[in-house]
Length: 435
Image (cartoon, rainbow, N blue to C red; front, top):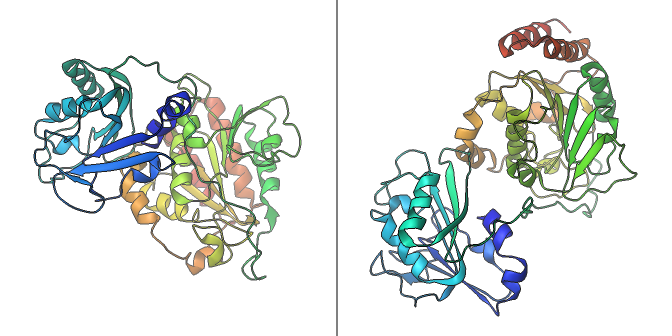
């Protein structure tokens, strides 16, 4: 829904109105709602549902009759309702009836997932279903897209009475940027550790991997992106470059979600051999970044993730409270160790906040995609990092010879076109050697 808002509820369309009335059909606050997305001056947000409940403004006597005049609403939204509606085509037509001639209907319904009666669960939807609804009601489906995260794999559709051009270019959705103007904590709260600086480790990995294409999420001042000697792509919505980037580097000033949603790195483009993730310091963001990068990476590529080792529980807070801040990125290691046992995971004792090397990638693996929602609910629950994380108990030394050997093996198997099975067999043999 944020993407719908960012693409359509902006610019001239909004400025031409004295105010905006939004109706959320089936909008009872059961697992959260869309109201916060549409907050703003002049916005009137109403929810309609079959029974009274949290956030319900209008209780419907008839599920197929909305108590509003024809063409009276600027925006109608409905999310995760249509599958529970026995005669969904009637509900769709009614939502279009109350919509203004130049208004928008934003519709979200699952294309997959288990039975979840509320009180019934009747349907799953594909793009052709949305096209059929538009034809049946005599309106236009402007665009649709499938959110591949599971288990629901939601289908999103944008509808209007008028034919509207699909917005061009990537969408800038709202992505929180953590403030850095927090007061310094105590020496213990601001402590860091590590034998070798992470940038020195990245430099060594570049030399051993000799990647053909490098991808970096979270460029900030540009120091790590400038290490690349190959084609390099940087992604950062708010970079603060200290100096111009080298000619081989391209910077996209976008949130990573927006970059990947725009398919900026298409299936036909050369796949990255090396990627560094240092974006938002929240579990769900780094999880999505990993999922998106793995999907587009070469099976013999290496993904490196920053900030996996907070040195104090306060540094691991989901809200920034210290100058040294890792957020809850540390949870990604535990998540991958549980759900992706097929990967090779190597934590490194780098300064200031550790690195995680991930190899043996499987671009076609759907485990994280299919289980995304329950994984996020579980791992974003408040939790302090355990002592073994704070103490870096399982971390390798960055200059451990095995790290270089793994990089060499990835370069060699990439050149030979080895299968993922052969790549993993060779990597695990190296990792199992004595230090």
